[in-house]
Length: 164
Image (cartoon, rainbow, N blue to C red):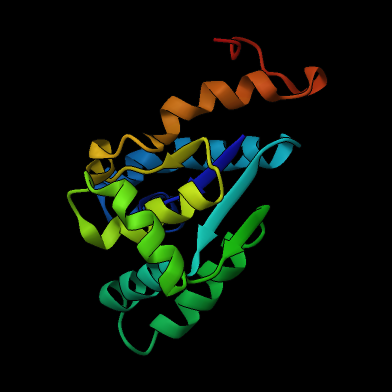
């Protein structure tokens, strides 16, 4: 299973305490990461675009004096997970793929979709509703993808009642 992670998922994981919405999402996202890290055939992708958005989020939500430390700690926490970091897209790939993704309502999300397609991802995990219009890759929330991970857990790690 190949999964591209959108920034909204990273924010819920790292900064759930900043909003009631992300606080409600955080336990599911933490369980999702814990489970994904235990499943050998799952590859998780994030991009420099997501990291850039995460940096902007931190500097928008923390005092300037605290933001560099918060950013460093967030990156340390994030990269404790088995992640593959993807580079920025070159012009050729951007032109090649953007024609395929004409249905995307928020064009700022275009690099995320293109990278998911380029990496042959099965899912683009997100809480962002803009991705719902995309048919080229399946946008899915962590809670909806979690049961698929549970099925991939080794038998000795499977949890009771998690075989749905």
